Length: 159
Image 1 (tube, helix red, strand yellow):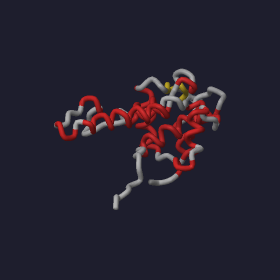
Image 2 (cartoon, helix red, strand yellow):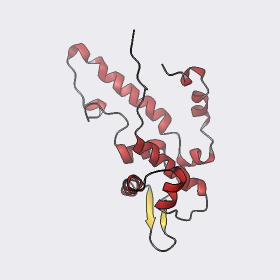
Image 3 (spheres, helix red, strand yellow):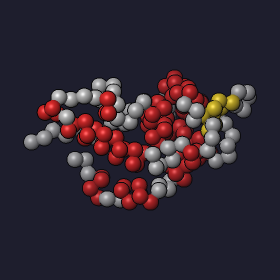
């Protein structure tokens, strides 16, 4: 009998980053939001959030605004930032094997087909994560092809 774990692993860092960006986008007015306010609204520890915001700034997703009413805002539009962009900014590649990208991993002849599995898995993740933007998430409306996938009953099963 196979042993099952919890499936795809989404790090706390990626989850917090996405939640912070959704919060910024949902504010809708374009005014910067302070890290303290973001942390309070999404219950994200301050030190952890500061590191995440710095990663998002380095990736060009956010800019910091100084001053009394400063804080964080999108460098461009939330509609231009995908969930995949965010995950890559804070955690690196969507799929890695021993810290390498799937196409860089080499297997002996008996296991060489495994590389194709990792490449296909990365493609499947990109097929979802690159189509969902922060604006979609903030508006609580997913692209139809993603909503259709989420509506499949088997998608909700933990196997």
